[in-house]
Image (cartoon, rainbow, N blue to C red; front, side):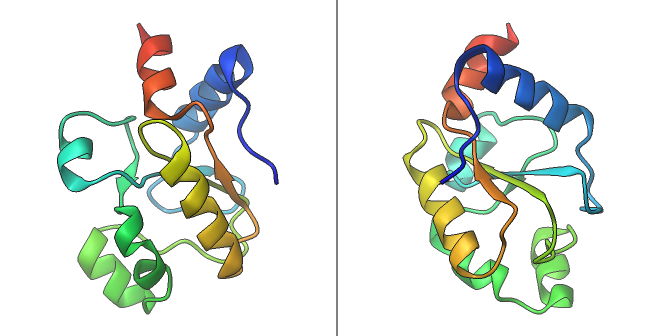
Length: 124
């Protein structure tokens, strides 16, 4: 399975992802999904990330687009979106989220293996 690389390459990926983030989710642009709990995300997250706790992810990705928009105030990702990047605190839930998204047909799902912890260390 492809995962976002760790270390310098991982940090570079995140800089690019954040630079091209879009709430519209246009194909070819990265969308960031923080799959930690609401409390964890409220304490700090990567700018532009949409928080959907991993416990809600399966139902969220199966919602009708209008219901997703109403609940998350964002456009639902499309199956053909190329860069759906999931992350958590340490990497385990992000990997779980990526695998779940792929099982639902989101072939562009990726996991940032370094997770929020690495991003936080690198951003300073």
